[in-house]
Image (cartoon, rainbow over all chains, first blue to last red):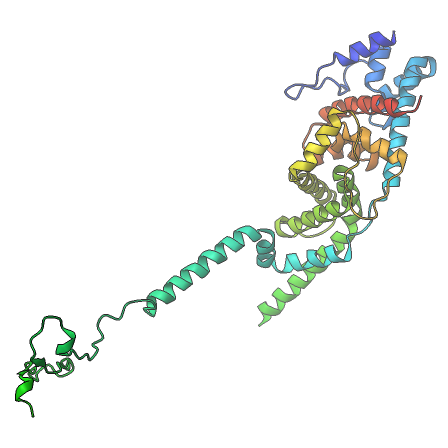
Length: 196
Length: 182
């Protein structure tokens, strides 16, 4: 009988599409319940979720059915073990001082809290901002640019030039670019033998 | 000037009301979260996050109500699920491996988390259930909520709540029978 009951229970399908197979219909006449029906409602009965009529039926059935009594006892025992086990776990009753402080800080500093929670995204955004700033500074102050426009004064000696005649080239001075109207002096060849 | 003063008072009042709500519900939510994730420190973080979400998203007046408690349970449950999903791969593999071997390896539950044999048995049995079943068992057996309240928290119909609980209890009875010494 017990096996038959379990098979029947295992064969029950969950309610589909809002179907209400377990919900008692208040208008439906209450039929005489068999063990299989009773065991399907035992947990509801123990936890006080059945309506009065069905609850009375289950109670009456339990008085005379040892199988259902055993099933009810097993459910009660399981509930007791769970409750005792739960008490033994010693769950904290209050938020810790640190969590409480952090909670109040988070609700009063939402942006900082967001940055704290999304620290990877925040780091990436900051890295991009810093990189863009550095690039802007480099571009704005011409740091690293070659200074081609600057004119240096140089002098070339004839003796530095290979295959050159004995003549010496007088120093060529770079023109003064600030005074472009002044004519540039032509280099002058001098015969060193004619020099004193 | 008046507006500024009014705004400041309003914000201070909101914070005071929020503080009162935290004091009112923290215990129940900590119990719930700790039973789902089996970790004290994680439960503290989860409940803290749930309250932050409450402060930011609750549109009505911050006054304790059944509706607010249901909302908080729902958010706490979602945060707990997120936490379980974000557990490290190695931990998950470890647990799965233990399940395959049909034995239970107690997870790291944080400092000072001492557990008795009976509690361990209950935890083992509870862990064998699906997350949805665990949620309903915790709400019904530990928190002693009615089907209607559970329905409001989970979004399931009361019929479904009863149905899932019926089969969850059957599984629990079978697991606890197995764990019982002969």
